[in-house]
Amino acid sequence: MAKGKLFVISGPSGTGKGTICKSILENEADVKLSVSMTTRIPREDEVDKVHYYFVEQGIFEQLIDESGFMEYASVYGNYYGTPKKQVLQWLSQGNDVILEIDVQGALQVKKNYPQCVLIFILPPSFEELKSRIEGRGSETKETMTRRLGEALHEISFIGRYDYRIVNDDLHKAIAEVRGIITTERCKIDEGEALRIIGKYKEE
Ligand code: 5GP
Image 1 (tube, rainbow, N blue to C red):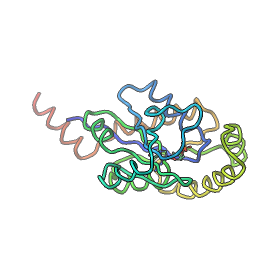
Image 2: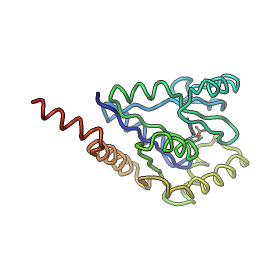
Image 3: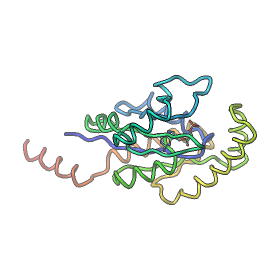
């Protein structure tokens, strides 16, 4: 049976990851975006079950105990995690799946699913990142300083990623991520080789 590819997209908040993922979903057939679960309070424009599953800490911890997460992490003092069931189902149905998650989560996924593809989205500069986070208007001075410190920490892990995209032009960044997806779909791994050989022998 066809198996989808798992893509993990990370990068400091304010780099445009969300916008890039949204555009890819709109333009690529057979690509799904995992909806994470979090204990963070929803922002004004966020919708439960669309942007995140917003849950109480107890519910999140119960799913940890049931091994229901592909990965989870504590980010900025809140839990965030990728519910496992839906992602595995999509992959087994042949869909490609994108996880938009932080560096800690990405490295956990790479460890457990080594064939996944890690993509890091970079801001064009630190100054630009600062003004993008400020522009969101949802940050206090304290969370702003913390997010910038976290951004530098996240960037220090870039060597563990397979690809990097600099988001200095949104259209170019989207095209580059789509290019990576196309490239990875055409790659031949061992399972794929056996499937192809079997298919041509049958005909
Ligand atoms: P935000 O609060 O701005 O929505 O997200 C904060 C950070 O948590 C971002 O870096 C985002 O990519 C990350 N994040 C979102 N969902 C998940 C998840 O399921 N797992 C992990 N490890 N990180 C996540």
